Image (cartoon, rainbow, N blue to C red; front, side, top):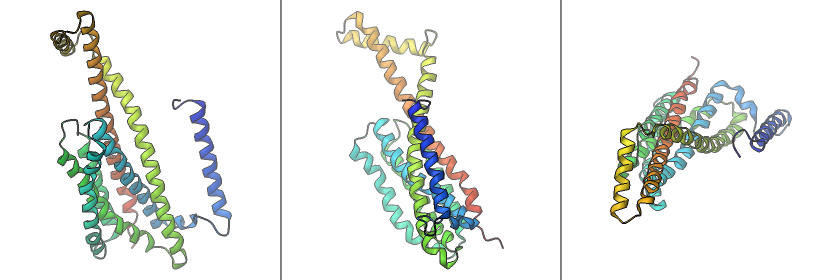
Length: 283
């Protein structure tokens, strides 16, 4: 439909109206589904902002990494899932250690460290391409899961410790809701980003494939010669070579688009260090 189509703009506007209506209703009803008054505690609001980023990161990366290794690197769905296995295992090992460390270090310190490490893992994946090996990708994912494991216990503890006892139940549910909401936003945002950036990179790369590009002419000549040696009619060799060139441009554009998605996740997580610092006690 396109981003400027009436359908997309209309549905987006309708969603915004329902969101503001939901907020208004939750603020005035005596028994709200989500008690928005917990956000009046500034340190809890900062933790909720980090939880939103956390959800976007863990769900977004679980979407983006398997898609990247299948589309760009040609992995099977099974092999794509296996890339995530080491990260899942290390996450289970890091949780209890991070819980102990949370008792010794301030929550904002642990959260900030986790945000930085996860952002670093995604920035490392920015340069990943078709030649990046299985274990290298698995190591990048593993590093990111270490960051998530470090920050999650501290995030929950830091968020709930600043609430009065009467708000603890609502605060627990709200922080989990915000995390899930971040996951929905993260997957949608990354899907849209990679689509838009693919179009941008495809147009940019296609514009360089001109008659004045010696590398392009050499490639077309070699592919046409190879087709001819296989018995392809001369009238079809040029079309075959151009088709191959188009496939190469599209593959490179896909790789660059996914790289932009990884970079976006890294930047968002590093920016998330700012609200993590707001979790510091005022004294």
